[in-house]
Amino acid sequence: SFHSNWKETGFLALASSGVTSLGETKVVLLSTSAFLVSAEAVNQHLISNQKDIWLHLLPDFHVGGLGIWARSALSGARVVKPLNWIWSAKSCRDLLLESKATLMSLVPTQVFDLVQKRMRAPQSLRAVLVGGGSLASSLYEEARSLDWPLLPSYGLTECCSQVATAALDSLNSFSMPNSWSLLPHIRASKNNESVLSLCSDSLLKGYFHVSGEDWTWLDPKVQGWYATQDLVDLNDTQLKFLGRKDDQIKILGELVSLGFLEKRLLEISRSMGFGQDLALTALPHPRRTWELIIVFSQKEFGLHQIERLRETFNQGLLPFEQVERVQGLPLLERSSLGKVLRHQLTKRLDQILLKPKGNV
Image (cartoon, rainbow, N blue to C red; front, side, top):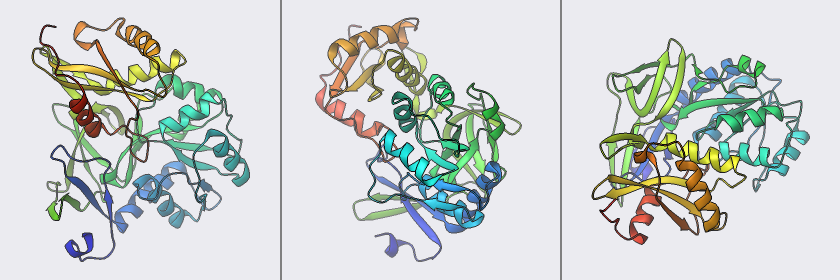
C-alpha cells in the first residue's frame, strides 16, 4: 500500500486517470506546500480574496477539486460544495443562484451541457476556470454569449493544477483567447520539437508505478525541470497548447495529430446538432501504419447520423487524415473529469474489431 511505501508526512498521493501503456497504475505524489504555491498563484491571477465564493463541483480526488480548498484556505473565500450531487445543467445554475458564487471550475463537457440547455450565467459569477480537456472556440463563443465568464486553462496533475490561464481581461472580448498567461510560479521552456518543460515549486515529488503488489518509485525531474508530453508555443509569458506528443502518429509517412482531428470531429458534431459522446482513435494497420476510427456511443448516435458526421468530417481533409471506419460501443469509458480513457478504449477496440485489411 501507499503508506508502507512512503513514510514522510505532508504529502498527497493521487492516482492518474487510466493506466500506463504497460498496464500499470501511476500514482502522483504531491506535497501540501506545492498545492499552496499553486493556490497562491491562482488567487493572484483571479484577484481572489475573502469576498469570493467558490462553487465546488469537481471531485476531491483530482487536483482541480483539491486546488479549490487550498485557494480558499489562503484567500478566506467561502466554498460551497453540494453533497451526493449529480451533475445537470439546471441544478448547476440553481446552485449558482442559491449560493451567489463568484468563482467555479468546469470541464468542457459541462460547458457543453450548459450551452445546449441555453442556461444563462447569473450576474454574481465573475470567472469560470475551464480545464480537463480541449474547449472548442465555437463552444467558448456561444457560452460567452450566454454570459458565462470562461477562462480556458492548461494544467496538469504533476503541477498541482494550473500552469497557464486566460487573463481576466480576455472577458472584455467574446473571442476565444489564442494563448494563456503563464502563472507567476511557473518557469517554462520548450525543446526543438515544441515539447514543454516546467520548473516550479508546485511540481510533483515523483511517481509510484503500481503493478499488483509492486510499487516502483521514479522522480522524473532533471535538475528541477519536469518534461511534459505536451506540445506548446511559448512567447514570453504566453503559452498556447498545441496537443500531446503521444497523440502524434504517422499515416502513410505523414504526421497526424489525433488531438487536433478529434477537436474538429467534436466541433462538427456539435454544429450538426449531434452529441459529444464520441472519440477519435487509431489502431495499427499493415499498410498505412495506423488507421483512424471514429468510436461513438450507441445510445447517442444512430448509424445514419454517424455516417453523415464521418462524411462531413472528411470534407477538406487530406487523404491520410480521413476516416473510413466507425465503431459503436455501449459505453465510452471516461475519467472523473469526462476525458475519454484512450488506452482502455484502444484495448477494447483491439479485442472486438477484425484485423484491418491491407488493401487500402
